[in-house]
Image 1: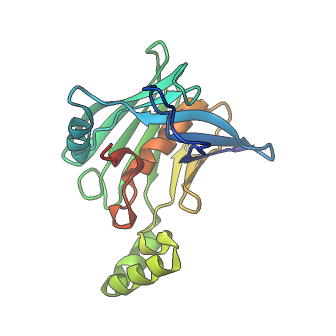
Image 2: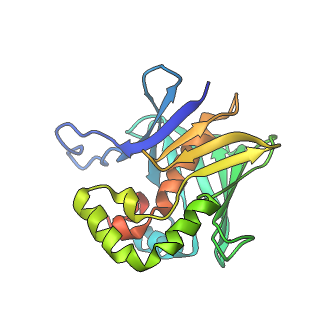
Length: 229
């Protein structure tokens, strides 16, 4: 039985907290196990470095990312943290750490034509587990995409007018395999991550959803972690 995770904005009632209190966290990761109803797996927000938002936005251009997974929207319990180990030249490595600083897993992104292939390569390794490797999009669909490249402007306009942004993006599905078996899968329809491997740490899955969503195509709007305030 696979678990399915997706990231969405936190529904707001009457607005942010008043009286000078910090506003609640703005995004959450929902998890559904089989036919069970979705539940909140974590609340997600970026963790700002010294220098605040301008410093974060400047660093993210090289691939750097930093965010926290909270147990609730008022930050009363830290579940995990994603930190950047290294970033530059199209390759970024991240660690997902538990509340006590213990390693939960690692995520490495190698940008297409900058790493080891023609497609963006994602490597996810649970602590003490087997490395899994996935590539963005299937070769066949990238081939079709490039064949249609002279028509991309028209496709983008039609996509935006129809409200279906995925039509304007390149192939985005990712399947992570280990030993020939699919352990993880990102599906562009709904931007969901499916945990196929049993016993996979939900915190690593939630962090993966969040970091994938920071690399959405800027053509169709800003990524969740690139806000100016």
